[in-house]
Image (cartoon, rainbow, N blue to C red):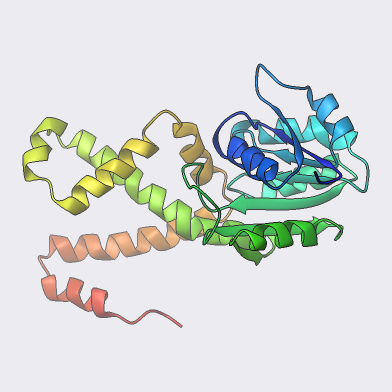
Length: 255
């Protein structure tokens, strides 16, 4: 058994539970709390040298404000949210502890972190970064260390555009006047794949995807690029200009 405990606030479900199971498997004593069960935030911060905030994005800042001041300077405060600038800023403001923003780029359905990407944003102290890197790399993860702003810029491109496209497609289907049952007989494999993605975005946790779009400070600049390209393609479609669309598809990527 390793000689310090790890506390995960929000560790009873989702990615928080995944990491609770992971650190248990690594030989650490792990304390987890949920909305209605488990030790209190005060008990976790008293007992654990590493405290991980793994609650939904909408509750993250509030939990950080409660847990952060209770940790000493040599402890680690870390979050697992999909955005980094605001949570990291709040951790720095709320706590004297070392601060690392962490974004595991996978969900709780994966069996291991082998081959998976994890982004780390260390912003205060250096005592715990090596521990995280060594533990994750040993288990096959691919680690990227970057600044919170760069993380959010990349997530706008990767998550933001993906979810924006999914939402706009589904809203357009809703407003088309065609019943979903009518689409099935005409559906292609690609369409069915995109419908499966839509079902996830429009499923039981729509607030997650709403927060990823509305809460990412890099999204407005990306939306301007999106709108510019949409207007261009829209006009080519209106003109029936297939060769113009083809030329766009052949245009080389900007260096």
